[in-house]
Length: 429
Picture 1 (cartoon, rainbow, N blue to C red):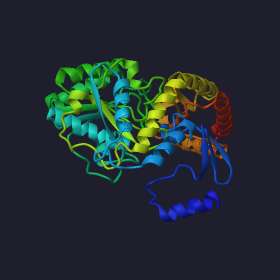
Picture 2: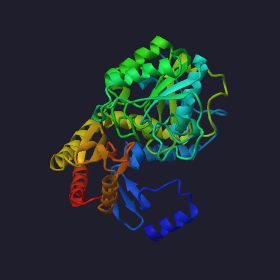
Picture 3: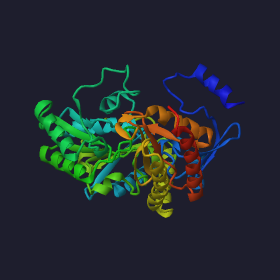
Picture 4: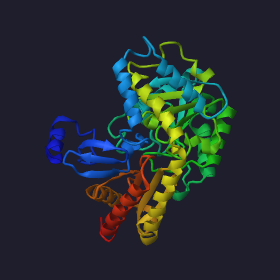
């Protein structure tokens, strides 16, 4: 069997809307490396889109999942619960930012977590409105798509979306949007679109994921907290891509010293096993009546077993600290590349091991280069490095390596990227 033959089978059997960035069919994976079914080896700088923060096939996660499988795989948490879910909730409540008592619920995906945050916020406040940010990404379900501030490919042809959703500009100094301008636009929403006493929640990613890895400045997040407190609005922080050590802290919101009312957690929570959570202030979380929250697979015992071990690994292997080291080493190499190609690489930015390189034409921030971005991602894969793209203009390459990646693999991957970029830099693509 070859990658090509299986890709042809996939095209015949699976809907094209569930895309495949690379026609590389995985046979096995270990830590930060993947081998395809043809025996080719790749350095994985995507980590399943920030899921495998602890690396592929971590032996402690494998052991915990195997032990759970030998006992039971599913009973439904809402029917006959189990200790691992209670223990995981206790631990997530303890590590969530802020001193206010917390409670948790478990679901299966990040989009479910987002939608449940909105349900909880509307139930608690009795208000309908939700404000999100341009460039934000919150999932592919209908309400989550409505919150998402990026049209292509997530929203094209899928409307209409739920009402009472509003978007404000995200602060982004690289693109000329200051904190002051973003806050002024938010205040304009309160004057022109929806009065603040009808807004249930404001939802924000501390670092935009699909939008391009732009960081919300601490002063902006603090100002949001102040406005929410002033108007009785709940602050929802979406930590789906930023959580569990990715940015150098357990959660990116910690950099701003802000306590959210509600948080979403998914992706890196369980080392590749599907589980997600909402963690929030206990009084708010307890507002919905029994049966109003949940789902058949929410809080899977397999996911709970994996997540409990992931928390131990992050602490014992000091992965928050390692994220800072990975980010420094990788961005150092990217900035060297930028210094050689300043007209093609407009910006290099990171928060811990959440790293981005934005490609432009002739050094002009207003002239994105999605063609070069796609070419670099494609050529890097041919050279054995898995990369991801993102950005509202499709011109950002994002780097999300496992936090357990070795320095040697970082250097090897950057050597390959350097060669690919140099080969493409003089072309018109």
